[in-house]
Length: 108
Image 1 (cartoon, rainbow, N blue to C red):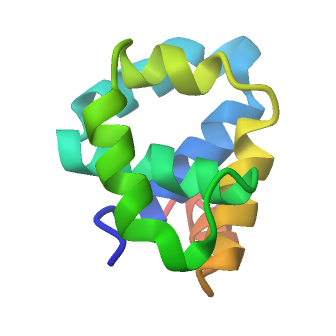
Image 2: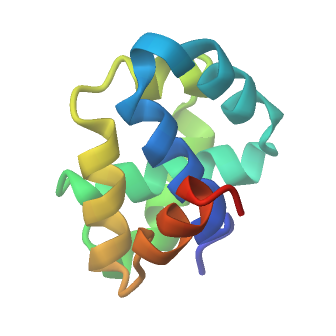
């Protein structure tokens, strides 16, 4: 079971697309997430880049929790195409960030 809301993942996706102007905001947002939410966020990214399959979500979250050796924000921002991987990960899990992204872009 995914332990972070799609809305929060959508926020990360949108901010990661605007790193030139939103990097500090994105780092702050990620650092405010709980440890469980951060592990889930990393797991979704891993699923999106095919490091884990969608049916391995629980294993991916546990691996992310146990292997965390750098701040999650540093790890994610150091990963090329993080927004694409997060979108692909959600899609593999049968979820979509597009509605949440649209709400966020409208200021919701």
